[in-house]
Every structure is written in C-alpha cells, then in structure tokens.
Length: 372
Image (cartoon, rainbow, N blue to C red; front, side, top):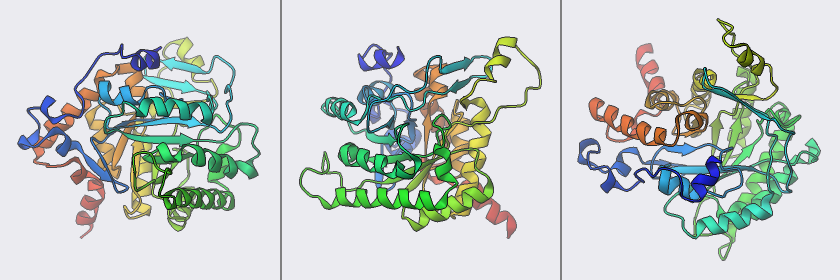
C-alpha cells in the first residue's frame, strides 16, 4: 500500500535535494554541497538512500527521490525470471522493538517487466542515483548462480548507476553459501565484472544517459565471522569489486531480557531475516571491521537499524560512505528522511564540519592517533 501511494504521488511531499528549499543549510553552503557525497566516482546529491526491498520492482524510485528526498534508491532484488517468493504470511512486525522479520524469498516480477518499469520511471527522473539489486532464481542450481546474475546485468545494467550483487539474503536456501565458498564467489564476481566491462565497452546504446561508470557492489551478511569477512574482503579486492553494502538482515535473534508480549515472543521464532533496532549496532560493528580489514580502500554503504541522524553518524564514523534506510521508514514514515538530513546539518554546523564525507572512518583515524 505504501509503495502504491508513493508511486501515485499520494504520499506526503518533503523538500527535495534543491538547495533553495534548505535556506538555513550549514555555513551558508547549499544543502546539496553539505550532504552530497562522491563515492565510486559518482556524485550523490545526499548520503541517505533507500535500501532494496521497499521498491522491489522499480515502480516508484523516481517519486521516492522527488517526493521523499532520498539521495539514491536501490530497487530489487530482481531475478531473471518472475517468481512468487515464499508463501504468505512472510512479513512480521514487532512494533514494541521496531523490528521486522521477513522471509519474502526474492519475490520478483522478473527482469523483463522491471525493465519496462525503469523505462517509465526514467522518463521523469531528476538527478537520482539508481542502484539495481540482483539475485538468482530459486530453481537455479548454486553452481550455475553466476549465469542468473550475468543475465540480469545484461538486461538491466544500462539503466543502473550501480549494480548490487545480493549473496546474503537469508530467505533463499543456500544463497549465503556463496559467501563461504571462496571458489564459487570468485567465479561469480569474475563473471559479473567481466559482464560489466562489456557493457562499458559499448559506446552506442549500452548506457542510458551516457553514464561512464557502472560500479559493482556486493551485499554482505551481518552474521559473517571475522575469518569469513577477511576471506571475502580479499576476493572482493582481487576481483576489483567497487564496493560493499553492509549489511543484509540477520538470522540471529536478540536475547530477551523481559518476555514482553507473548505474541511478539512468538514472532521472534518465525523463520526469516530480522531488521530494525537489533541490527543497529551489529551492522555498525561489521562496517567498522570491514573498513579496518581493507584500510578504508573499499567504499561501504551502511545499512541496518537506522532510525536517527545519530545512527547515520555512527555508521559513517565507522567507515560507511553512504547509508540506506528501510525498517526505519516503515515505522517512522517518510518524514524520517527529512528529519535525519536536517539533524545531520545541525550537528555538522555545531561541530564545524563542511561536508558529511569528512566524518567517514573518523573512528579509525582517532584510534590511530590514540595508538601513537
């Protein structure tokens, strides 16, 4: 219902990324200058994006930027063939803790229909950065997963500002094994990068809007061990992947200090990925670990439990160059995006920070100074 309202322009309207709508921006600089970010060689109008899962089929990404004020939108996950996903019910809310458990299972209208949706949305597009998150079909064998990712990049790569390889959804049987099998992961990423390079070599109609770059990112699980993260980081660097998204939903459950409502206790027992407040600190820790392992050389988009400007601040200080929101908007509504941006500007003003990118990885720089 929410995605329908936004698609039809029925949602509340908030200031876009136009600096004139933010006359009190930090240090008399424009709103877009203060919160804009250059990452993967691309300029993002602001650092707050929408995570995949909300606009699964690319029907409202233009309105999400114009009306809600996101700096970028990631659509998907998109599979080559249409598939219904897992049986319903497959989404469960925990309002008292502001969490969601979902087991959608890559429900998708398929890449052919998504292409038509993107064409319609791009006709009215206004300086938004579009990420396309792709996954494999449920009936595709694990050893042939790379072919699904290859097909979808061939079909949709020309519409994207960046591509996200989803290998961390907990609701697709065996998918996370791609994070544990280094050989399979290397084959997948090598195939994807090769396909991306083929797209960039075509100078005629290969890229809508004459975009010169097509960064490839990998979306990782928050449940990786330190050794698994180190192994994945090495392959990502060896394969020249452009960035990572940390993190997807978690398969773990919080330890309940108090039982709370019996109904909500039962919901925690549902199978699926957990997002929301329980993921806030966990994802931030994983961001910090990956940033440290790679010495900050691989850009990170931070996701997981963002409900405030403080959550954004913590993730960026830990090493995220951009952030994405999902569950926070489900509970707080579209106004959360505007509030976070204004609160970020206010804090930057107080601390004398000219651009939001100045705080990326700041925790690590402070740690290095402390060690001297």
